[in-house]
Image (cartoon, rainbow, N blue to C red; front, side):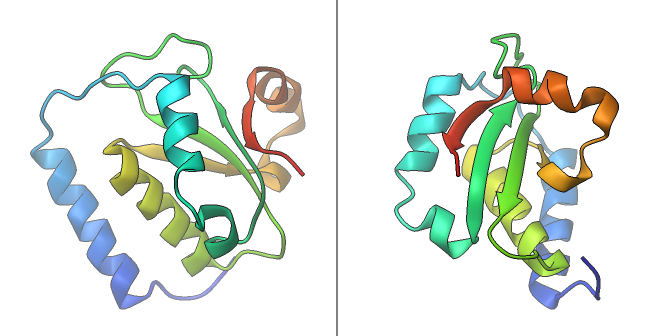
Length: 126
């Protein structure tokens, strides 16, 4: 991943900053809601060239609070560009109105990889 941030992503970054400054109390999202919402996005996996996609973290463990972020594990079919990665992150944050940590399979540190994979709830698995 490399390159400059596109004007569209710059706009999204500004939106996120403003949204975080004016955040109201949010609802707790369940695993079922997240999986159903993602599966209802008809071209989601093709649009973002996703090979594998999973939820992990507090939401996957049913320990989320209204302030919890969402943790997603992604593996792309091809090498992702910075714009492609950021577009996916911004899309998910807008879709769920939550902060999103988007982790690529290749970037997981070996010491925590098994923990993440053990709790992962796959929405799409290659």
